[in-house]
Amino acid sequence: MKQKKTSRKTVIAIGIVLLAVVLLENISAMIPDLPQVLQPTSPLFTVLKKAAVYSLVAVSMNLLNGFTGLFSLGQAGFMLLGAYTYAILTVPAVQKDQVYYLFGGCAIQSSIIDALGAVFGSEGAGGAISMIVGCFAALLLAGCVAAFFAYLIGIPVLRLKSDYLAIATLGFAEILRAIFQWQKLGRITNGANMIKGFPTFSSFNITDASGNVLVRLSTFVPFLVSSVCIAIIVLLIHSSYGRAFKSVRDDEIAAEAMGISLFKHKMMSFVISSFFAGVGGALFAMYVANAQAKAFTSVMTYEILLIVVIGGIGSVSGSVLATFLYVACSEWWLRFLDSEQFIGDFKVPLLGNGFRMVIFSIVIMVIVLFFSQGIMGNNEISLSGLMKKLSGKRERKS
Image (tube, rainbow, N blue to C red; front, side, top):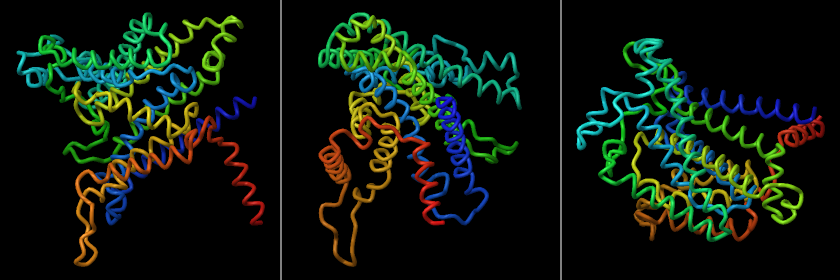
C-alpha cells in the first residue's frame, strides 16, 4: 500500500511538472509584455531542454556506476549510437539526397515517418500522427541499438574490474566515434559530415495553416521522455533486480554466496543503462538539430560523470538536481564572465573569453571539497517528507 501511494504521488508530481513546463513555455504567447527571460528564445528554455536530456543520461550512468558499482566511461559512445540511429531512421526520403549529397544519396532510401505516412497519410492530422509515432518509435529503436552493442561488448569487458573496465569502455566509445566518421560508411553515416533535416523538438509545436505557432511543446517533449525513462529506472532500482544490483555493488562475494549471478546482473545493468543512454543520445540530436560523431567525445562522458559525482553517486534525484544546476551555470548564469564588463569608466580585470570556465571549475572544486559525497549523497528527495514539512509549517503558522 505504501509503495502504491508513493508511486501515485510520484506520477502526480511528474504530471504537475509537465503541466508547469507547458504553461511556462506558452505563457509568452498569452502575455506579450513579459521579461526577456520568459521569452521562448531565452536561455531559460535552452537550459531546460539540455538539462532534461542530460538528466536522463546522468541517471542512466548512475544506475551503472552508482547502483551497480561498475565504473564505465562509454556513455558518449552509446549516445552516439542512439543519435545516429534516430537521425538515419527519421530523415525524410525527399531530403536524403540533399543530406547525403557527397555520397550520391543514402543507402536507406525511406524513413519510419515515410512508412507510417503511407498508413496514416502524409498531410494534415495523418502527417502529424506519422511524425509523432515515427519519432517515438525511432527513440525506442535508438535505445535498442545502443543496448545491442552494449550486450556485444559486455561479454568480454564486464569480466574486467574497476579502472580496466573504464579504460575498455572509453576505448570502445573512441573507436566507435572514429568508425562513424569513416568515409567508406558515408552512405549510411554521412562520413565526417553531420546528418540533419530530421524532426527536432520544435517539430512538435502545434501550428496553424500559415505556420504560426499556436501551442509550443518543444520543451515539453524532452521533459516527457526523460521523466518517463527516469521513472522506469526508479521502478527498476526499487525492484528485486535493483536490490541485486546494490548487493553486487556492496559485496560481490556475499552477493554470489546468496545465489546472485554476478555476470548476469552486471550485464543487465550495463544493457539497461546503455539503452537509456541511447535514448538520451537521440534526444541530444533533436536538441542540437544534427547528428555528428565529433560531438560525442570523451569530454561529454566526463561531463556526465561530473554531474553524477556532484549530485551524489547512488542518488537519482541528486543526478537530476545536479544536472539542472550544472547546465544552468555553464550555459547561462556565468555567461557574463566571457565578455568585458565596465563599472563606469573602469574595466573589470580578467573578464573575457574563457574566464567563465575558470570560475566554473573553481565552483565545482568548492562543491566537491565541501560535499565529498555530492549534494544528495545516496539520499533521495522524498515527496512525502516535503509534504510533511509543508504541513508542519502551516500548523505552526496557524
